[in-house]
Length: 430
Image (tube, rainbow, N blue to C red):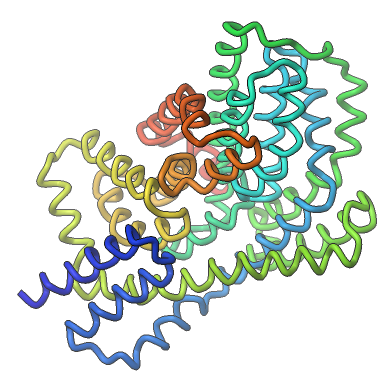
C-alpha cells in the first residue's frame, strides 16, 4: 500500500504539477521529494543524488555543444547556409521550400537545436518565401518541421543526454546513427512540399549551376567544418565528445568573430549570457531528474511499466507502436530534455525486450520528442514559429498537418527498419 501511494505521489504529483504549469525541474523535484518522504528515505541524499546526476564527464559536452550552437547561430552563418542550399536545390518546383529544408539540415548540424533553427532561419526564410509568392502559413509549417532535422543530425546535445541516461551507449555511434534518419526526414518533407507546391503552383528558382554551387560551398565550408571536427574527432577516437565540443567552441568563436565577422566581442558576451540561461535550465533538469530516476528504481516502476505494456499484447509490432504513442503523448505536455531523462529509464528496457537496440531507440525517442515540439499545448518550436511569422497557432497547426504525416511515416520506418539507424554505426564503428 505504501509503495502504491509513493508511485501515485511520484507520477500523479508530477503530472498535476506539470498541468498547473510549474516549471518541469520544480515539478520533478517536488514530486520526487514527496515520494522519498512517503517512503521514509533520508532527505540528506537529495544533494548527493543531484550532484551525482550532473557529475559525468560525458555531460560536460552538453554546455560546450550549446555554446557552439549559440556562437555559430549568431555569427552570420545563416545567410551563408541559405545561399548554399539555394544553389543546390533552389531550381526545383517549390524551390524556396526545398531550400528551407536543406538549409535546416545544414544549420541543424551546427546548432543542434530546433528552436534556434526556427528562430534564426525562420526570420530570414519566411519573409523571403512570402515575397516570392508562398503562403505564410505554408512557409511557417515548412520551417518548423524541417527544424527537427537538427535534432537528428549531429552534433546534438540531446543525443549526449540520451547516451548518458541510457548508459553504455556510445555518443559517436549515436551521432552516426542520426545521419540517415535526418536525411530521410528531409527527403520526406521535400516530397510533401513538392506535392503541395505543384498543387498550388509555387515558383521554381534559378537553374542549377555547378560553379555557383562550388563557390557557395567554398564560402560555407568554414561553418560546415565545425561538424567535421566534432563528428570525425569522436568517431575516429581522436577526441572524446567533451574534448571535441570544447575544441568546436574555440573554432566557432574564431569563425564567427574573425572569418564571417558576424559577431563583435561585445556580441560574444551577449551570446554567452544567453547560453548561461539555456544551460541553467538543462543542468537543473538533469540534476532533479537524478532524484526522480532514483525514485523510479526504488519503486520498481520500469518493471511495472514493462508488465503493463506487455500485458496489453505480446506482439512486437503492437508494443513498438505503444512505445511511440507514449512518447508522442509525453511530447504534447513536456519539453524534450525532461522526456529523455524521465522516459528513457522506464521505456528502454521494454524496447530492448522486443529487440530494439539502444541506439535505434535513441533515434526513436529524439524524433518523437521533435514531433512533440510541434504539437500543442507545450510545443515550444510551434510557438516560436507562430511568433516569428506573426500567425495564430491554430493556422500554423492546420498548415502543418500534411507534414505531421510525413514525420510519422519516417518515425514508423525508423521503428521497424533497424538498419536505417544502425547501418552507419555498424559499418564505420563495427
